[in-house]
Image (cartoon, one colour):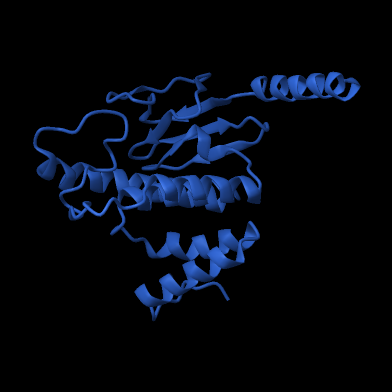
Length: 221
């Protein structure tokens, strides 16, 4: 009985600490920067002091840049023509990344009926709302802009050492667009797995990279 009495307060304080974790805050913005909430279709202008929820997305356009203060008090710089979600800035450990990757894989297991081609599948930019009526014509244009922004956002995460967020972001994107590929991001992915102490994933990423870009000069030495 005494053990139970001691354990309950410990769990309660752990949950309280998690709930009181500081959010990400937009501390400065330059140029056209927008924010979109989870399950929302429309973007709205981003204002200094904006507090981000975990799955809200921020994007920059043209020459715009944004500086975001993370929950750890660090400052992340989002470059032009890039986008990330607030959850991409979490500082996660190896085990947490493995758990999220496993959950991600389970959610995207093929059903045996999924024979849609790349162009027929829902575009990755429609992650917060319903599909447009004219799916194919819109996918060919808007999804390419979405992919470009996601690619630049992923590289910004890697370059600023947010390796966990980078790995999870890129894997989410490939689940939505399995035929999409980026040589610089895939090269960075190999290094990110190494940084996170994930040798098997690193080897798989390396083999995939060599098959797709056998003559690449971007492979880490």
